[in-house]
Amino acid sequence: MTRANTRTPVKLHRNVTLIRTSEPVIAEELLARKSLGRLVLARLSETVLLVKPDEADAAVDELRKMGHTPRIAR
Image (cartoon, rainbow, N blue to C red):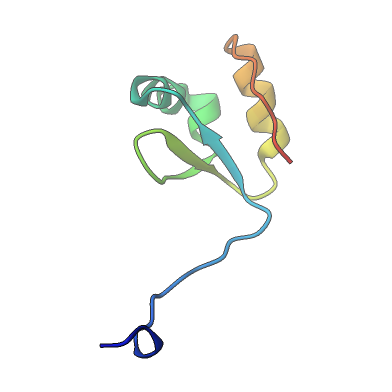
């Protein structure tokens, strides 16, 4: 099949909040904390969590309460 004939399904997501950790164990710890876990919509990989829409500020607050210093990329 030529490249012109192949189609790759692609989704583009705009305005989403992700939490990316350096280690899977940190993501586990974040999910285990009920106050933060309730803000997470899905786990996209071992180190990436998808935050519920409109909960970005609450997630940052919870991360700081846990002693993390999140770097925010806009």
